[in-house]
Image (cartoon, rainbow, N blue to C red; front, side, top):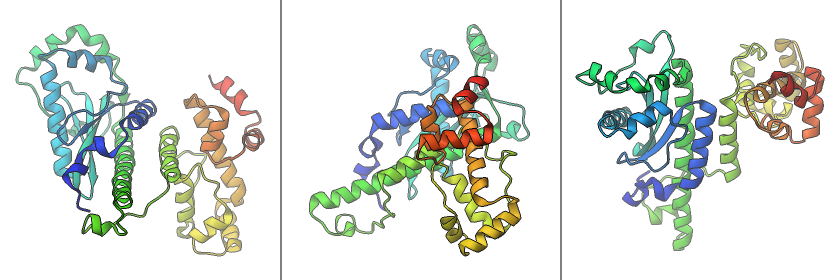
Length: 342
């Protein structure tokens, strides 16, 4: 897709107010500070969940220039690589620059981080950028902020990579959809019948409904609270069933029927049912219900969402059915479960 200069401005592509709300929510569930900048490096959102140490440092005219250098270098590396770039700032704080790209056109970046890396194999290999010539002087200048530095959240490199990858795909998907819809609306407004008449050479993406986009966002936020490889979620290595397992994990808020799963696996429903029971030791409906209730317990423990919303997030269209199913597998209602876990 060829993007005209006027379409390179993120402010003209996205609704900043809604994007800020999404950014705030993602910062809350991921535990990382986030800010979005345009292709010039100029912030287009407020910082979400900024840590006190970083706030104090950035308010100091002399210290903030080091932060600005790190932001600039990180963004340039992400642009050069065309993929997220994870690094250590001049204070050995873990940060990442996530480029916003549409068909290799750089539109801006999402800067995330402000966490301390935990001891983990591979973390020591992260590049420390913009190292000041006089580190001891820098440390002396921030001695008064030591308590805030020690209070920075700690996160494993593995966890950071998962969050960064999720944000990369989610945000780029939303922006690409927004660009495409803007072009289509432009065609309609100008009375053109074909996108090519407005912008020659533009190949259109499959357009999904706004509801579909919302579902993707909801699933991404839900995923941030759920352990993907829980011991409660055994997965068969049978190649025929892999499409079904993948679909269930990636579409947690959907009601996945046996018929649809059979279609995904390119087998008949009866064969899918027999194969699934043989491989998993339980029938499909029992596995699906138990897995969704396992996800629900994690959401009850880690979020303040209502029971009804959690039921919807894991694929129950009716709150009553969710509560009944939850009690069947856990022995108590979701309300009681949350009270005991607090």
